[in-house]
Image (tube, rainbow over all chains, first blue to last red):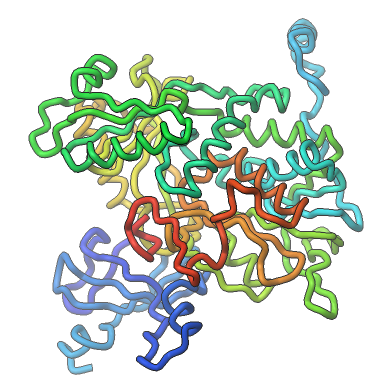
Length: 91
Length: 417
């Protein structure tokens, strides 16, 4: 599996760190116990196309949003994640 | 059929042409008292203990593929009970005791070989941690010996003792640990459970749950039709989230791939099971002579049953750091199994919020050694509706309650365990 970083080009997997499912959104300060529990512990654990956060620590150190099929490891899209990585390209 | 010295001799003398199938390949009935989803080691062990310990014989085990096609055939065959946390210590020792009598119980040669498991340590801090774990084990009546460098050198003289970065300082040894033949474990449980009347139904994939007006699970929809059930137990490691989703449940589990490796066969070299505590590398030698080894999970969600190169490289580097001479041994096979990685690295054996549905999941990459213990306590839960005392901490709601069992002290993220 290789990831095409939007800033560095195609790189081998060892340069990246996986941060998990990109779908859960951090609850706000006033969130209920159930919402925090859901966010921290429960996962959809999708068998199929999933949106994930990866960190390119061995390269440009940008956070990336990777769209990948967990059944085949096929990657269909890589884009800068919201935040620092996205700011670099003005996204 | 029952195996004995006479049955073996009879089969040998008749040219091995008259062997009977070791279990009945059953067709599904309309209804069972208990339906177990998953014909792996844990599902089959559960069925066997339901029948043999708890007297519930109207049981079906549903397997989507064939017996031995899943994680039962994708592990590194190690058995041990060297755990330090309450909840784990007693449970894995219960499992170890069941391994020790498995062949007599099942009338099947599962090749349980108590050749010892040694965890090497490479720093003072790691020695202290292992001393503490060893003491915990001994307080609980489990064998453990802390070996110094001289004792390790005597036992395993061929390690690289000149590694400046990670010098071997000693090891924690459990002599009762070892290996078992993974295929024979599932075949043995299938053989023995079938003999007590359990129906083992292969090529039968569960596609949904049948629920009554109150939401209680009363059966399963399968690729071979509807099957009614008094209770349904899930033991589908790797696919727990997918099956639970059919009942509307979300679990504290991610599925990850773990790779394992086998080298070409060489003469006897590795005396027992060794782990390289500085990296994450473990190795044993099969009875056929191949070195069987592995390391970390690949670290990202996967259902692909195959891994990637960085972990393969990391595992081989770990092996080379410990035993540089294996660099000339060729890698024969590599494979990936899909693990239920739970949020604290420990299993879940509990009733679910859905009435009639019971869960056995979250074994991370420690499921094989747990096989008999898991079956025993899951059968207890299904038969009595209360958790077995050695599995009482493996609750589904322990994350919400703050009662995690984090053996590695790594925190709430599956790819750290």
